[in-house]
Amino acid sequence: MLCIRIIVLALHTLINVFLLTDANNEFAIRLEKLDADGLEGRVEVFRRGERAGIWGNICDNSWDEKDAIVACRQLGFKNVGYPVDGRRTALRYGSGKDVEYFYTDFKCNGSEDALRNCPYTTYTSEHNCIPDRQAAGLMCSADFDLRLSGKSATEGILQIFYNGDWTDVRSEDFDDKSANVACMQVQDDQDQRHTDGIIVDPSRYGNDVGSCQFSNFDCHGNETNIKDCDFTKASTKTGCTKLVAIRCDDPCSISPCKNGGLCETTAGGGVICHCKSGFSGELCTIGTVGISSGLADINTLEFETIILVTTFGLIGFFLLLTLLTTIISRFAFQHALQRIIFEADKELESQDPDGFERHVIGDEEYYEEKGNEAHVENDDGDVEGVGVGEKEYEWDHEKSMGNYDERFEGSCDVK
Image (tube, rainbow, N blue to C red; front, side, top):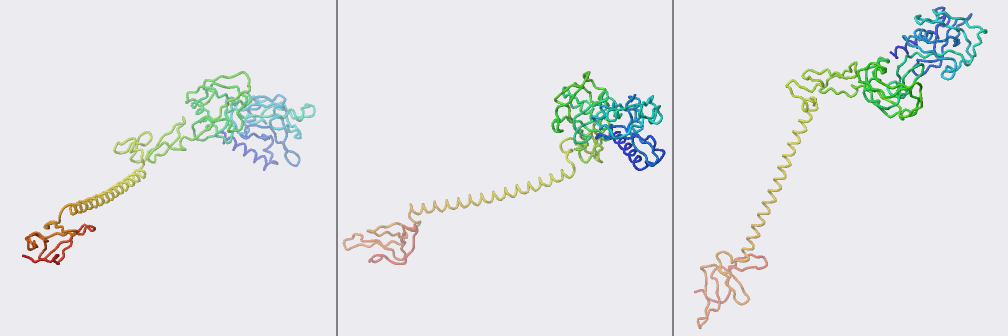
């Protein structure tokens, strides 16, 4: 609703600017030195002159709440309005001392739709209104209206309009439920989607010291206005620290709905998930086959990706396992073969070659093939040597191997 109010006020301002000579704009009003929300300022009234229209002030004589409600209604606000006297107007919105007084002594009953329909008095010098101290001001707010003073309309230090002024709130006992109620009220005033309230540090908005009249809010979370919650109200505003600051976030900004479900914010600040075909449940986690949680929470693309990655992972694992097995097998085979050769070499070193007999004559050593022995004897019958008729086997100690030689060693005859 705040947005509608601001739009209406802007339209009034455009009409006043572009149609100043139109007789129908007589008694149009505007708020000069508007605040950031466009809800308050010094009241100026348009009056048609001889050549062109001009704007003037209203003297604050008899300026009361009924007059303020009618003035706010004329500006497009409904049943709200709080009068601001000349002294406070000068401090907040500027005195307008160079602006002429046009009217004074309004006596509205509160039901009129415009100030022109109320009894009033045209200002004359006899009224003696002080130029820089008695210009009437206006606040188009009602008790327990809320605003957030900060970086935007959705975050800042929480302030409550009460008895014609804005007051901060002490943070004692102010919890998430109270923050949710405050955000719902602020968003309703601005015709925006309901959001969750998040309590934040007030120092991020440049000030953590203020003037407070309210504290100890205790909301259930389903109230539509913060005045419906339990709270403590002091008789006057006093200095305070530890102010309440909140940020209003859309609960659907990070959708809790799974599997492509559409998120919708409810009037109470909750969410409803509209599930796609094939899924159901509060958060669209139940598939058509009745699988819930875990696997059903994974949307189709994520599931296919996981299956693909898992498949390639298994293939890679088995290829690696096969490669390692092959390497290990080859290493084991080579090791076993080397062991066999080593043992065979040792056997050859420790034993005579198969089929041969070892003979040593002096420093000579040779092997004779069995069955081909030739004994060499002297005249006394003593053996002088042993020879081989056809083959001789010499043993090479350095190469650990034997070689056949077709020579006959020794000077003897074969018997």
